[in-house]
Image 1: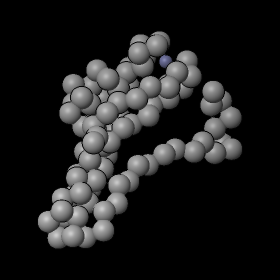
Image 2: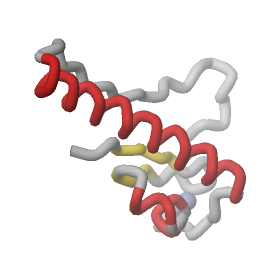
Image 3: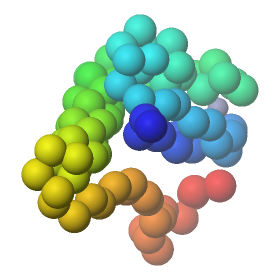
Image 4: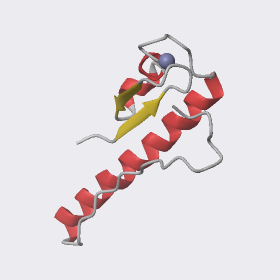
Length: 89
Ligand SMILES: [Zn+2]
């Protein structure tokens, strides 16, 4: 199981996914496959760090459920545009 990032390009409105932290490390899967706009380097780094943290959290939930018989949870984080995003497609 891997954490999935759902990315929506604000330039063309295309929505695409990137899975886990390892495919994100090369940075290629983060740019828009539709209009080829590139995500800024620091933003890529932030997203990679967040995905890595979420992968670790979900892995630890599963690990501790097996090793310590703790309740297991799996977390995904979504994004809800607010009213200030008037130009959002
Ligand atoms: Zn695009």
